[in-house]
Each structure stands twice: as C-alpha cells, then as structure tokens.
Image (tube, rainbow, N blue to C red):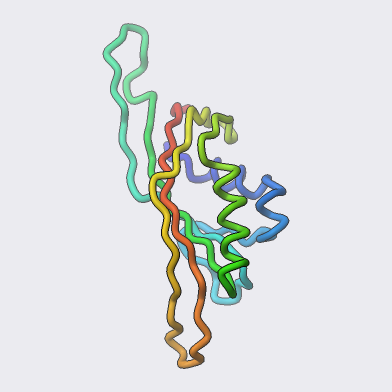
Length: 138
C-alpha cells in the first residue's frame, strides 16, 4: 500500500501549510483553474526494506520518495510555502492516517522558472523538493 492517500489528508490538515495554499494541494497535476500558490506532489519511487529477524513481517518497512513542486506568482510566495512545507516534513516522525511514518528526510531541492506556452511571457515560479519517507505498511 502506498502512502499517497494518508499523505494527502495529512497535508490538508496542516494549518501552517493551508493558511498559505488553502486546499490547493494536488496529486500529480493541478487543474488549469488553480490559483497560486499551490502544491503538486507525486511518488517518484518505492522500495521495500527487508529484515531477516524472526517475528518481523516481510516488506513491513517501506521507503518512498516523493517530489513536491510549489508553484507561485513570484519567488517570495514560493519561498513562503516551501519553508512551511520543509518545517512540516523534514525530520518528522508522525502518524498519517493509518500509516506510521518513522522519518522523513529532505533529499534535494532546487528553484526553477517555467516559461508559459501561451505567449503571455508571465513566468511561473516553482520550487521542487524531493523527500524520502520511511514508514510501516499497515
């Protein structure tokens, strides 16, 4: 089982984040009508951590990497949301729904500016972060 639904619900319950984005947190793609700032995220990969100790269920511990993209109208807007996301995720141990998250680590992050395809020349500011989640499967 993936962490995705529990992660989405957990993010939407974090007022430090939703005070900046509202409910504009989307899996993979945002609707074209989405106003900024908003967050998109997706699972990049998933691994099982095997343990040979007696009494340990096979594949109980999972590691999944998620990419988060923060989109905004300017650098300051993106930086505010990115900082809130980092504060919430990096290094935490928590329960997300039925998922016991053992630890989350920021792996990489970078900033980017997306040029529009519609000829408006109004750029979209984006910050991309990759986090590794270690959790127990339910």
